Image 1 (tube, rainbow, N blue to C red):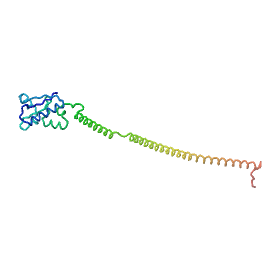
Image 2 (tube, one colour; image 1 turned 180 degrees about the vertical axis):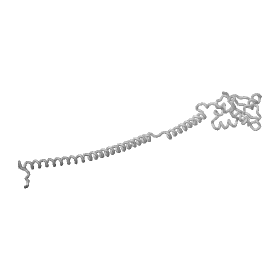
Image 3 (cartoon, rainbow, N blue to C red; image 1 turned 180 degrees about the horizontal axis):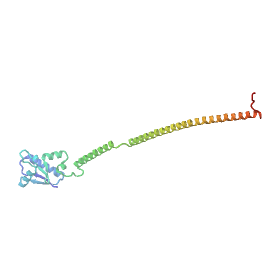
Image 4 (cartoon, one colour; image 1 turned 60 degrees about the vertical axis):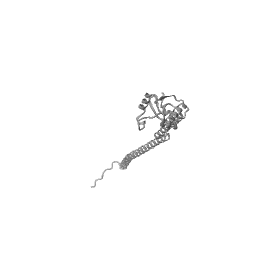
Length: 220
């Protein structure tokens, strides 16, 4: 890339000459390769410069004055914009050139780049922290769910056990109720048998006590 500086070697304006010297001297100090194009002695240079300066950058009368600076075909600016870039340590950016390592502009660009990366990193970390659930919280939720499940299971087991106990008691009650009438019936049968046995014994004793050959007396 070649930097083109359009100058007027035979300008009668002291201000223009001073501005041209300022631009050229600063470029030489930075060791930037550039080419001087004289518009005073070369009409083609004059026409090319006037045609390629953007309309919004031209003065009110439409005729741009030197010095005008280009990077190949790309317009960089006039003296005023060059001066602002020099004051802001951004001449290489103004010229569309990469700053050499170790220059103030390179250090500035590095700081800006690092700051941007740092801000992006911080933003990413903030997003991760806001969306990621802490391990302790996850563990706490897991333990809480396990405890709830354990308590629910214990309650269900207790209810089942109580139900089984109630069923057993009801079954025992029914069994006891069935056994009681059976015992009563057995006792009644035993009493009846005992009574019959006693009656038979009494009858046998009575028969033994009666005299043999005794007959019923007949009244005359």
